[in-house]
Image 1 (cartoon, rainbow, N blue to C red):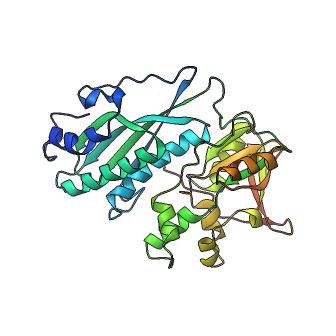
Image 2 (cartoon, helix red, strand yellow):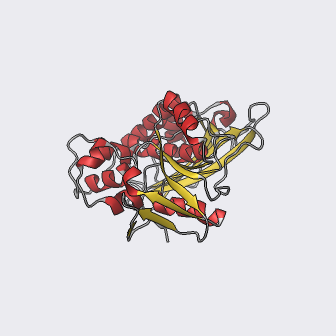
Length: 322
């Protein structure tokens, strides 16, 4: 994990030794080589995903470094959760300006260490480089799943029900709080934005037709499932689960809640008649699961309706990177 030509970082190999080598697992070979050795558990296949985070785009530049690290790891763990996979390890790339304080790296590594202990993963390797800025982070998560058991985004069918874990809108409202646009006396919303909760370990295999995590906005991510399935979907705005803090934020925030993203909850297509049992199994694991609508035939659009089944116009369906 390193580039000897990288200039300016506080003695790169010393930095790796102080902050990142303590995070390394057996496959990382003590971070002495440019590659790791990964062996999946017997009878399992590997699942891999990658996400990047850029200061000022995916997190605020003054967000605490430990929280930034935890969010980086957790958004990748969320991708595994959506496929029904279990985590194994990760590769990490850190590009930072040469004047980044060593204390930032210490706090960043401490955040990773906390979540490694919580989720049972270790660092396998990666790279550190200097950059004129901003801080740019990339993490590749490696997980495992039984052969043929990975849940795909493609697979929803008309008649399947739309279910979602947890609560929706907290991430977007938490960003608004962080930007000073919204009040949140409890700090709950800001906490949900800074450190999401990946829904790992849910009994989805063999039940769920399709799944995706809500990163770019509920409506946009639901639209991804619809396009891949060649169907539409209808959700009832009043059924979308909200936290007490989101409800307390006041009316008029429906577009932000449905299109804001950063929730990292799981959005599921569940065959009719199987949702109640799945919800009970998830509740036993401490994760609420709520039915919010249904997949429909016809076009690939997402329709939002109110209690009277009248269509609501939602101008913003989600975040797009380009």
